[in-house]
Image (cartoon, rainbow, N blue to C red):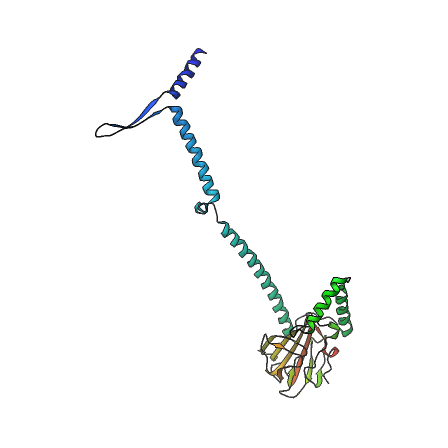
Amino acid sequence: MAKKEKNDKKFARKLLHQYRLVILNEDTFEERFALKLSRLNVFVLTSISAIILVFFTTLLIAFTPLREYIPGYSSTKLKRQASQLNYKTDSLVRELELNKQYYASIRKVLTGDISTVDFNRDSIMEIAKNDIDVLEVEKNKEDSILRAKVEKEDKYNLFESSIDPSNFVLFPPVSGTISEDYNVEEKHFAVDVVVADNTPVKAVADGTVIFAEWTVETGYVVIIEHNQELISVYKHNSAITKGQGDLVKSGEVIAMSGNTGELSTGPHLHFELWSKGYPVNPTNFIDFQ
């Protein structure tokens, strides 16, 4: 026990033993600086210096842009930009998929490779009526004021107008005798109307031209997209007067009839009508006489 106490006292004396740090002039041996130190003082000063160094290094990494130069850390700005680019890429991919589906539907319209559904005028009008009923909500004073304001604006709007599906009337593209009727069993999803060469072919309703090109089998073809998810197709034309993306009005000339394409057997207009991706009989809606 006495030996242990003796060793402890010896260790304490070593920690507290004073040393003198002297800086001398090498040429004159003149004392320029002197400092009294002990082992304990050196240990305490070294520990405090290390703690201060770690503290300021942490502040430098956490609150200054210099952390971006340290391996393993990334810029917050770059992360934000990467997230935005990721969202934009996802949106573009979804838009591309929608465009692919849209072009696939147009391709089916051109080739006639699609399942058929029996449509008639009454069923379509009933569906349109049911769609309108779903949108009906309980009216209140604020709603009535808003409706009156919107109707007043639409009354003088030259570019847009509210269209009631039940009042959607189709204009005859040409007038003539039907040489071949709409026949689902033979996959003839159109009517062939006999007309003279270069007879003006007119749009059946307001819409946008989504296809206006030459095809080997059907000659010059024009496809127009209308309201109510309706598409009209005009084939075997001798010339077209509209291009893709053009806006057309009901009754406006879009092509000249002819006898073009390998499948044509004489001067006529091959006219198709598609509703929501399905072929419908044009004679249910249009009088070609």
